[in-house]
Image (cartoon, rainbow, N blue to C red; front, side, top):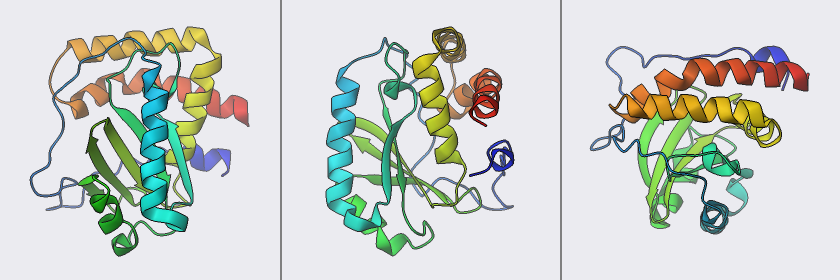
Length: 194
């Protein structure tokens, strides 16, 4: 994916009258930040195995992303997983299989890179589904890999996360409060990656 596409942050709001949340779902309110737990890598491996068994060849790529994927970075104890499928709008190809494996569809955002979000209770996880043309999963990998090798930015992001969580509210507000620091680091990482 080219650099210009990665630097186009398309924060599309829902179309009028639409909500990203499926019935009964809404933003989480647990903003507890804990020190990095090495068990998160094991939890990811378990989740990736469940997803792979459920989806088979429909899962083109499964990646551990987010703060739990970066050793030394404090995080909310919720493992983030990105799953790439051929067509996220073809929900029949993956939603029933993920639901049968214990994942619960919480977000449907076809207007934003085809994004769907599933939650899992044990271990706690957010599973993000995108198509192969989506920029967001590539950004997640660039950001993850950058933080793994740049301790100063890792600590700067950790401070932003703690401050955002301390302000309270729900997870969407938390994300918005740390977004400026995240984007500043991400843009630098994308530019360095070429």
